Length: 329
Image 1 (tube, rainbow, N blue to C red):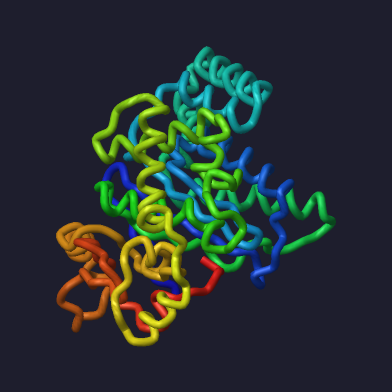
Image 2 (image 1 turned 120 degrees about the vertical axis):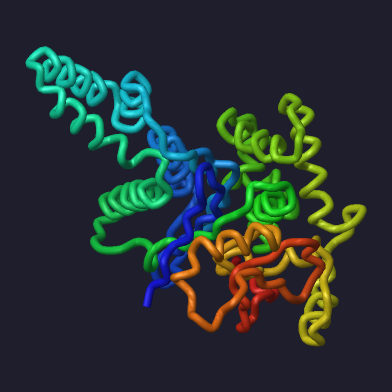
C-alpha cells in the first residue's frame, strides 16, 4: 500500500530519488547530459530551484526548493513556456490569449493560462514532467516502450535549516565518491558541485542558495570555499581517506560513526526517512499529517542510529540496514 507523500507548507525543500527499472545501468554520459538539459528546462518552467543533484548510471538524486503556490504574472508564464516548449509555442499561446480577450472570452483565456500554471510550484508535477520527458526521449532513441523508472519517485521533506540542508546536499554530491568513480566530487561532472566548479551559472546558483541557508551571501568565489569546506570535512579530517574496514567493524558492533564516515555510507535515513530535520520540525510535520499514521503512534521524531547526527531526526525508525557500505546510494 502506498503511503501519502509528505508535502511541506509554503516554500519547501525535498530530496527526490528515482531508480532505473531493475537497476539497469542505462544512463551513460550522453544520457546524463540529456537529463541535465531537460532537468534545467523543466525546472525553469515549473519555477523549481535545483540546489544540487547527482546523476548515476542507474539512479538519480535531486535536492529541490519548491516555492509556495502563488499567482504568476502572464508575462512570466509566457517566459516559462518559452523556456520549456520553445518560442513558437510561447508566441502561439500569447496570440491565442490576445484573441480570446479581444472576443471578451476571459474565462477561456484564464483556463488556457491555468493549463500551464497548475504544473508550476508543484513537486509532483515537476517530477512527473521530468520523468515522462526523459522516458519518452530515451525510448524514442533506443526503440523501446514502457517504463524507464521503477515505481513512483521517492521524496523526503528536508527542513530548510543549515544542518539538514548541508547534510543532504553533501550526501548527494558525494555519490560518485561513495561509488568509487572519483576521489573528489569536483571531478564528477554529473553532480551539482562538479557542474558548478566547471563554470555552470545554473549550478553555481544552486550552490549559492545552499550557502545562503548558512548565512553566507558572498560571490561564487567565496561560496565555493564555504561549500568546499563542507565537502572536505565530509571527506575526512585533514583529507585522510575514509577507513572502510573501520566503518564495517563499527556497523557490525552497533557503534557510532562520525558525520564524515556516515556520508561515505549508504544512508537510508536520507532517502527513506520521510522527513529530515530538527526534532521540533519533524514533530510539527507529524502533527499536521497525524491522520496518516497509526493511532498507537504518539510522536513523530525518530533519532537515527549508528552515528553522530547532532540534532537531526527523521520520521521513520528504519530497521533493515539503515546504514551500510553498499556502493548503491
